[in-house]
Amino acid sequence: MGPRGPNDKVAVHVSRPAVTTFFLIRHGDNDLVGHRIAGRTPGVHLNTRGQAQARQLADSLGRFSIQHIYSSPLERAVETAEPLARKLELPIQTSANLVEIDFGEWNGRVISELDAIEAWRKWNSFRSASRTPNGESMIEVQGRMVQEVERLRRRHPGSTVALFSHGDPLRSVIVHYLGMPLDLLLRLEISPASVTCFTIDDWSVRFQFINSTFS
Image (spheres, rainbow, N blue to C red):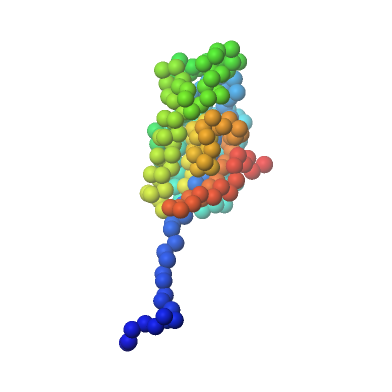
């Protein structure tokens, strides 16, 4: 074969990056939601409403080709994941990186009482430079959450992964991949038992929906 001419076509094969789909799921309702800071307190379980939400999640998400389930180790998150895990016959793998914020001295406090504390108001308006007393900063929370998403993306390329976690940690993931500042985090509503879905590869992120309750 002679040398190629200027008009000869050369076949170029471009491999498509593996796209991983993530379902981000907040745990279901419990008796402390909206009233008291549950934080990392052990023994906080789903209430009757939360258990029903978990079953509804299993029915709704069961139609998707979810291949892996990961959860915060706290009971309310694992209990939310259990009906889906049974339906899909998948194990629940717990990850400390998906755990709730370490609220430090605010853990267990009544939310209406915290509203009178200046440090609490600052925390809720200036998350990028605030820290809970003797607990975590929001930047630290976002760092461990995004690190876990990226680890699972590399571990499960081309797969569909369900992550069960908590409200603000999930918000931190969403604002990161949306390119939003942490200080706008509370503009996102992430309801108990809600689902957010996005796809990610080496080049792009696409959100399919945010805060869906499948109602």
